[in-house]
Length: 337
Image 1 (tube, rainbow, N blue to C red):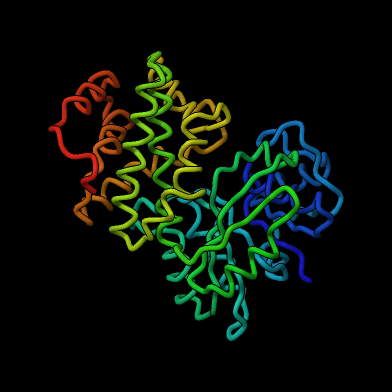
Image 2: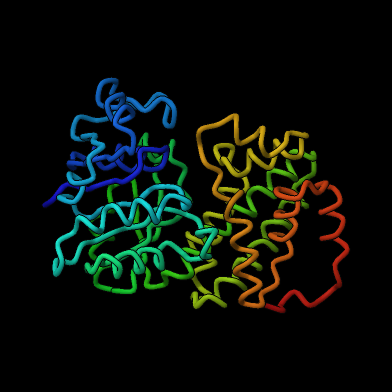
């Protein structure tokens, strides 16, 4: 059995690498910058992204993409805005005619093209003339909790049912349970869109609002995520599962959520520039909000909460005014999708 490869040494990539290495599996973790890889190898910790968690012995670190080519599966765990470049660099090293397994653990939409990561992967594989077997990993998982072995669950989805089942067996551990799916589009849309709603949840918390307001946001947020997901070909059932409702609830309510913390800071008067400058970690919902709004317009899907989040994040709109407008929208039946 080949080692598991992990592309991306941020908090989530490191947590996945640590989790599997702690199970005794050989893992190769790739960091883009050689100095970062050297630091991880020397200190056996990733304090900037996953403080207090030692890197187990079976975990090796590299900055050489050629070394990652020898692993299988390869988990791609980089921010959505850097996904295409990393994919381009790795797939050109694949041998033609030898299908390789890539698993995206990235939750976002490419801003410039509004492509999901599965679409980016297909485009770059075709450009390089290589065969890729693709899957997406998503669910309600905080990196810090998975890394220390807290019980967690996720979904692995692939258009190939056989591959989804194969990865389900390969990736499941005693503390990390996997469910298989064929709904790549639904899982990807759910994972990307929940980050935007989570920023909104942080705004509500930062404004000092209560549980009634939060429950309304999560419920109606799930409604518009579902609308867009179904319009993009997703399965309605996905949005009530781990990748949909599960991840949305976690990200909207959990104190470890970067997107939620971003919303809190916005409501407390910090500018987006100040918030982004204060951390090395990526709040995917900031960029994803714009891509989702454009995708929704293309699909003629109403996403009023997401639209208001774009206005707050990128146009300086007062969060209280955005909330007033959402509450004052035309009344309609709840069942209207």
